[in-house]
Image (cartoon, rainbow, N blue to C red; front, top):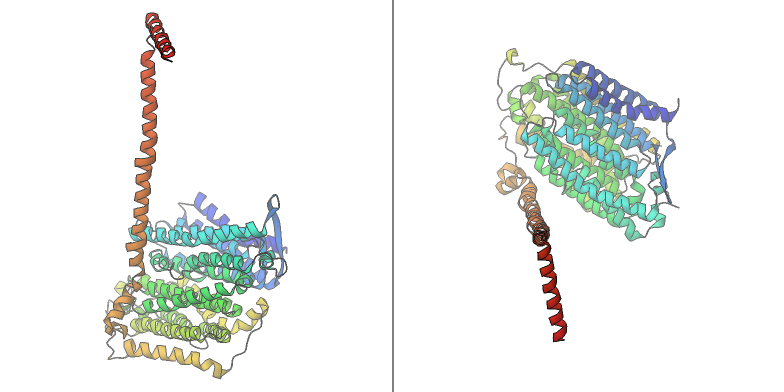
Length: 611
């Protein structure tokens, strides 16, 4: 079958499902859900067919031409797009299926499922895009869809504020990305991604090293916003105000993954700019460590997972910036699987325990939900990096990439972030599985029962992925056409030791029968205050950035109203008054006109006489 037709079906059918559900079945949620799920199934089937066909030449269609600039719309079929396209489609379908149970009682189900279809369409179209401008269009549509879904419960002020914050902060990054794209157009005159990456005729060959660094730093500014890297990371935890399935999709295979994917897509250009790579390494390292410290004291289960996403995205970018293309992409894929699983498990707990507080979930019998708890253990183990789960293998590749880079400070930072990851992950697990006290509500309150099969099915499928995906590293390396280093057990021991130390630390603080359940950080009051207040970054934005913005807005408002508007209004009033005076002279009396003329001639004569 024609791969172009398959790709069109894979990418466009979810949009068709979105439009049909929203326009024709707004009051028939059962039909709308079926249409969106069918669209998701088509995308999964199409992406798997494309993946099975292997890499092939890109397909391009003329979009428009103006002078020397020719833009194309098309699809790229390399290992990166084929592998990640399949992951996006599969996880989107899992989350759509899970949402059938999770959102069953929501009165706006049709709108919710339609927006999931829009989200899937935008992300898949971004992944397969062959043209940089085409990528940017769908990059923005991914952001728009996330805005709609984060603010889905817009009647809640917190949800509306979170949606606006996410939209504005990611737009800040997108300004940098767009400027970088315009510079590329101005210097190279094309947006074709394979053409830009060509070492002989692409961007590297046509611009100076300084200009290349400028362009790639601007592109990375866009990635910082989308993938929530310091200092543009604060929108992501607030985005947890949306429904939990949205959080799962946002953190695994769509919104935040788009930034890392763009870095991987333009990897050869980043590799050609050492200054940019050092910048990325520093920022991603700070992000990984900073977000891990906040997760250590966070009480909301979804926000713990949100900060863990920020940290893991930092890991991916560290690997890519260190030259570990395979390591970064591998962790992007494994993280998508186990993070989607963890959010769906969190949603299952929230759905039954009616709380997002970790300790409250534990008190209300969350551990009695056996299938959900099994998913939590598998997903948490993969996040922490316990062998042989998927997260262990991809993190081991990251450590190896950083070691080969030779900058030991980044290696040490990565191990420290891994230690903190194991700690906060098992802090969450121990607080749920080993609560200090437990309420006994019985079956009347629904506690002890697990989620329905429509929710458990996707969770178990993702759990299988979190267990098995790590063993697919060799296959992924061949698909990406890169060499994969084989690691000995001795080389892996440091990573295993760090994870074991983090789990032991969490057990000492929260797992022991006699544990104080406050954590080491809580006993260091200044440090605890710093972490609880999220390093005061949001407070700084509110006190300085927001206030400065308000002052500038007030100043320009005053200039406009009191200066420009009053000035033009005054001039207009002057013209009106002069017209009124002139009109008064037009009396219609001929005698008056004659008298005026005589006076004027007399004055003119006197003037001439005086000369």
